[in-house]
Length: 58
Image 1 (cartoon, helix red, strand yellow):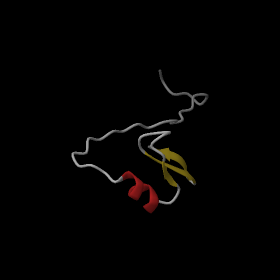
Image 2: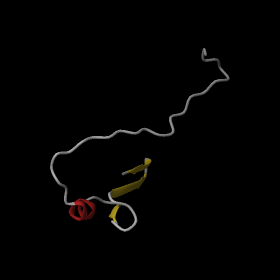
Image 3: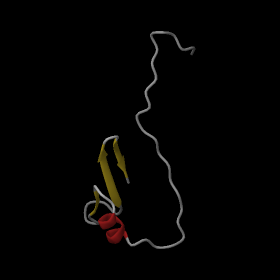
């Protein structure tokens, strides 16, 4: 499909993953990053939410 003046493209999500062979201290990581949280009862990873730019990283 060729792009026309009426066509627009907007990226909504980008997903990447990595395998880390070492264990991570998730509570320490979350406490050292602004706007990060770690609650293993809700989600088994660190969640970082920023407002500008508006992103969420897991």
